[in-house]
Image (cartoon, rainbow, N blue to C red; front, side):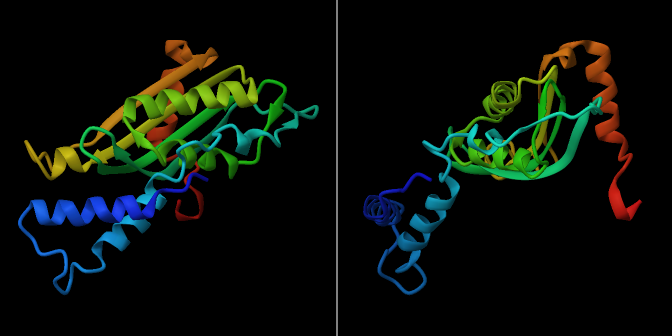
Length: 196
C-alpha cells in the first residue's frame, strides 16, 4: 500500500481553505486538513500497489471446467483525475477460465486496487480486463462498469440522474454474440441470490 505525505496534504488543504476565503483555524475547519489527509490516504491506497497480487494464488482447474464465471454488482469507488472528485458504482466481471481459476473474493480486490488511484472510468475498465488476462490467462474476459460521477452530477451541467457505462472485452468474449449474451445476463438479475 502506498503511503501519502500527510504533512504536504495538510499544508495544501490549509492553503486551499485560505484561497477560497475561509479561516482554516476556525472551529469546524481546524481538523479538516487532517481528515482530508486520512481520506486521501484511503482514496489513493492503490497507487504503486500491484493489481495482479490478488490473482497470484489462482489454482489449476480440475476435471470440471466452468463455462463462465460471472460476478455481478461489485461496488467500487474511485476519484476522477480531471477534477479530483469521486465517482462510484458497480462492476460486473466475467471470465471464461483457461487452465486456472481464482477465489471469487479476489476479483473485487483487483478492482479495489486499480480504483484506488487517480482514474478515468474508461481506463479503469481496460485495466481490470488486462489484469484478469495477465493474471489468469482466461479464454475470454468481459468487464462492465456503471458509475455515477460527481463531476457530472454536482458541477457543470448537473445531470443528477446520469450514469456512465464502460465495457472492455478480451478473447472469446470480444465476440459480439458472446458479449451480448453476458451483458443480457448481467442486466437480467438471474441468480440474484437470496432476494429472488
